[in-house]
Length: 468
Image (tube, rainbow, N blue to C red; front, side, top):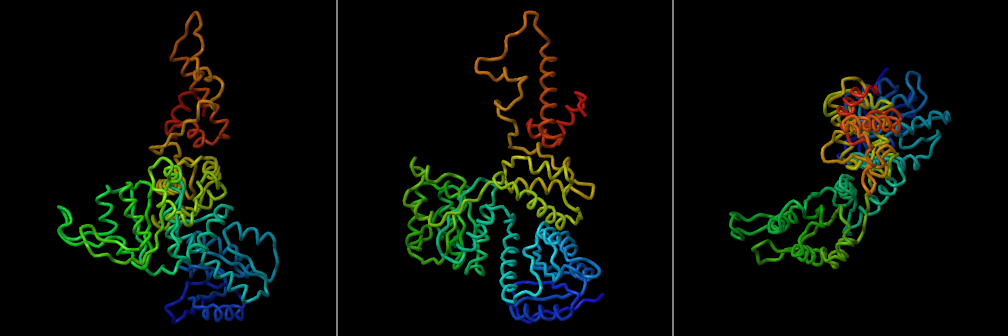
């Protein structure tokens, strides 16, 4: 077993690539071709050598033969994903195998090429793989049709200088999309400057955005450059643009029209070469109709619109994102969890995710921190114990036993002999618990979520009513 190290002398390499093949001629051919393209290249002659390299140094892209004497390329990819989930894999083989192809793609391989392959085709696939890697670094993970369309839009929009409006619910990753657009643009080497428009009052927002001169207001002891100047030749990201006051909207409109601004308290106009990306979780078109958002500003920011779908509309991406976050927090916490248990996967897939990707990331971070086995268990997810979220089902979805309690004409008639209220309520509680367990297929975390309870509370009531 041996390893060869070949790296470029250029500082313009677009990324690092590990080539794994037991054929020396193939290793040398790929190494020469990829170095000419400006990549840093590391080569290994077997699977075990490749895994050793991956443990010693980060690699962006793995190109591996499938059939090798000691380990298959699929096994190398599996090991690589455990070390760094963001790594992108390309599998090559002279032996066609549907089973191997399916397994490689299931593990997240970007593509699968048969030998002999066209060099130009490989170059195209490598370029596409690096695009995927860069998107994964911004947590833009998933292969659902919605996310494939989003990735394609990002790549098409990025090279332009057009203003972009990103819409979507809180937690869907609007800033991540903005950063991905910037990183794929011609401005990528210049600053990306974010500003939350809802976090500051009007007077401070103007100063933060355009800067101020000394003495412009009481606490202005010195002249200060604004974020527009800081973002020169780069991108400024205006998050929650719908929170701007109407007066501030006027000033932003003028800036977008003329690409010129004045510092607060200043008299000199300055030019600005910045790209503007805005984001909101509100429906700006409706705000225009109610007079809360200027129509002319709406047209200025809504040049290109990207709508980030909520996680509940792309459920096929949930497990890919969860695995991505497990690997991320493994690295951060120095842990080595192998992934998700079957029960954890079921719980994640059946949960509604009102907080979207941000909530999923927080859930996985907590689970990785608390997990004391080698795999994330459903109990560690604690989906029903997140503050600020209402997990209770709507009244019309409750089981029959309590339907009367939610009728518009009030509760059912009391029996002539009366009853013990506490016993009656406990009977209803027990029925809810049993019904939730049945509806959740026995997954206790999911059942707790259906009842708006923390997992700990749910376990207490299960024990109380002898339900398991």
